[in-house]
Length: 539
Ligand code: SF4
Image 1: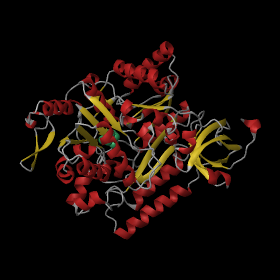
Image 2: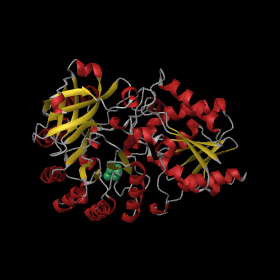
Image 3: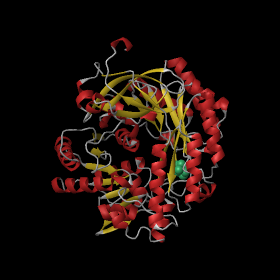
Image 4: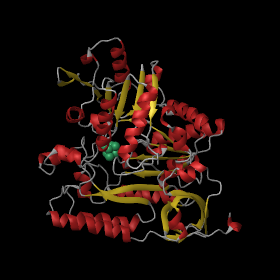
């Protein structure tokens, strides 16, 4: 069977053009592609991101989707994404139905897993799959090929029967993740994400390399924690891959794509420091045996208890950055979030990162139901005291479907109408605190003002010129930005830095361009103000 998998446009339809680096590519699609190919099917991919030729996101989607349908003539179409991709998926279904009404459409990903019944009935694809889709989709394709309709025998499947939505029995997927084929990125325009669009990668993922080639890897599925705001509530089991299986994938990816940065995407990579030690030791062997030369980063939970020796070993193996979900420095809010961390653990991680000279990052998210002016003050004081030089950002808590917070908002009437919630997803903020609305608005405004005025060090460029080595596609394929070569000194350790950034030409020429970055030696954060100035002696 021929299957077309369609990747959502980032921030559709508000952001246009939408740029997507490989680090933000939804890896689930690559796993699905690999499973389908292994079962003997032909897979086509449509990744409409990074396309600057159209006036609007809607126009782009329509043109590219119809073109793909004509060129590939698929027997089935796979759509999916997160809850925030609902408008993209809705529009894609409508376009497909208008030109190819009889091709079955299957929908999956977090948008289904976290709110299957509502989303299935609202979007009305032909099928949906809850949770891991590798096996279920292959089974469904085979069933359709055979002309059978015993859909109830495929676990975790949504389908239509006489006009009514039906769901087959839910089954926990106990298959070892090692048994899945490695993700296959080939159908999804991987080379341009690694090439001319690599500089759209978030800076935390690439500040150690001026010519980043960023690759990603998923080392486990599931999470044993239950944070109230998190949508990873479907599977409390932590299903991790063996270190040998991970190394095999790295070897395949390295030979194929010659990446120089590896981002381990797991929210919880090292559930305990032993796993980090095993991973780092295996990487050191790989570096010695295969000449691997890449930097890597990971995220984990404070309870992993990473110590200095383990982080030192990780650094020796190329680790340049790690992050925790910080969320808050108020014990009251952390308890309300069921975060199971203490502010002291974050403080310890910041100190450890400084000792070992590895980058550290995380996010504060304000607005949990337990948030007050007092708890916010505790977090802001912590931020000011400990986080100015680390890669720590500030934002607000959102109640996404699948989280306990979303259920709380429905129960409390904070989200009064689910349909309107989805209509305006990510465009509206919800006051989940006990503060009156006006007070809450004042609190959130003051938080954002406080952090924007906080003293992250600023440095000016010594030289900035348009990169003479940039390819045509790099220059003209990134909207109003093009690659600039920049030279400056780290304001923390004085290390001389050469890097490349995508900047708006006019802003550099008029000397008001600025960006946040990190030092590849001390790994601390700072802001660079860029003004065009050639200084060929410095390059
Ligand atoms: S926020 Fe992180 S630690 Fe908490 S449940 Fe989600 S993935 Fe697990």
